[in-house]
Image (cartoon, rainbow, N blue to C red; front, side, top):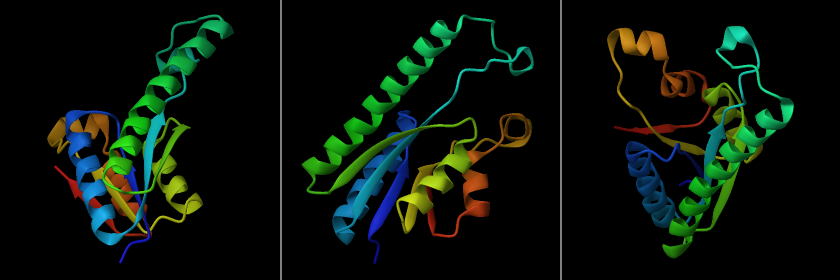
Length: 147
């Protein structure tokens, strides 16, 4: 069935549903789990909405985000290991979540992606975009989307 399952998480309640489903599926299939959290970089341009800060402050903010992201995926790995599933916890820095997910799938040779969708519709979807839609459109492996 599946050998390595990537679960993308942001730590939200909806994302936890995807994590729990991915752990259960990995346990059932005897697959390894790769837990991924994509951490944004600090916007440094005025046009990106960033406030001009010293480089040391930017590094501090990015380190804090990375540490918080690592805590999220470490918790996923711990929960998976409690269910007897081998798990790897990863954080990557990227502004484009879907690209980071697809790159991680390729790098770690995953054969299934599990992720949540917030189910935005209309203008909210247009304005906020849909990382899930981008992953569905460009993935070369099956994608399980939970709502």
